[in-house]
Image 1 (cartoon, rainbow, N blue to C red):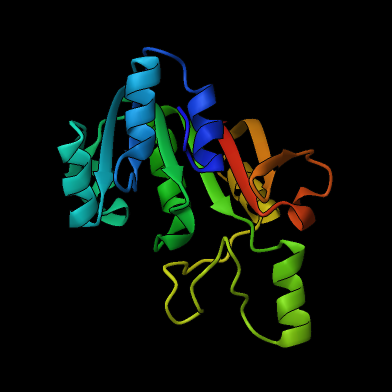
Image 2 (cartoon, helix red, strand yellow; image 1 turned 90 degrees about the horizontal axis):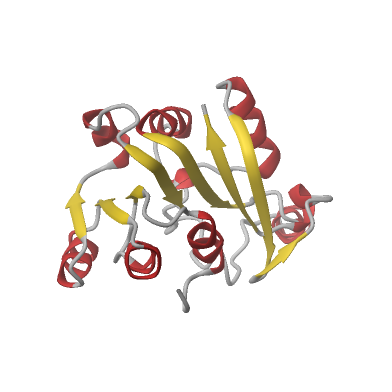
Length: 196
């Protein structure tokens, strides 16, 4: 399971072997392939971009084209051991509804997202007055797919509001894990494992 983006590596390391997983917003299926090949996971995917769907299918992966904002209701409750949403929550129309659907479809759910409360983002806004462009947030404000600017503390509050249990959380500074202390200020990315 090498060559995975750091948040995907965290998820791959913590999905149980032989389980089932739905990767929502799966891209070209990189995580799905790692789970299938490395852990024997029955991995399925939902992806909006037709080119990514074709790439994933050409790798022998089971992916359908669909939109997380409208198509998750078609999946039965508890139909997967894991529902996975990596770097997609902030691009959805209603993250609260998506989180509800994730924890309905999967017995457990992984969610990863960029932390918009990271100190560099704050400094860019405070001192430059502009939305940041960084290695991890490379698009300008008008070209980004990110329509909701979620922070670690915002996500924790949403999970609590929905009555979800946070089983584990991981925080990334650059490409490396970091301690949870001051994560809302210092972590660039977060990964959460949830259950209802």
